[in-house]
Length: 137
Image (cartoon, rainbow, N blue to C red):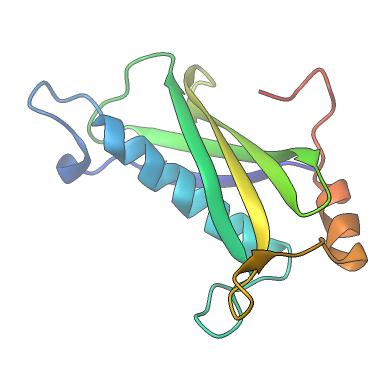
């Protein structure tokens, strides 16, 4: 099951040519990721956060512009022992692909400063959001 959020491109997120600035895509992906975590039962908070971002990438497919309405679709593409991968696609309001993103997330114990095995209950939740092989990326 895919997770979706809507984003409206603000002026401050564009460059001198009116295109979405490269860094803004990562802001959209972060917003989608934290909202996705909330849907899966993890609200962002200092005392209870169990994740670190190990890697984040974004491939720019098409141009996006100021005031454009975008949709960020997120799904789980891989579930490992202590980590998982989220794939994102950013589309305009007509469904045209603007960008593809990917984030590798590690389940982490901040007190021990090391990764931990994903709990079974969370692994089951991730599986519910696992992308079909033909849809991922």
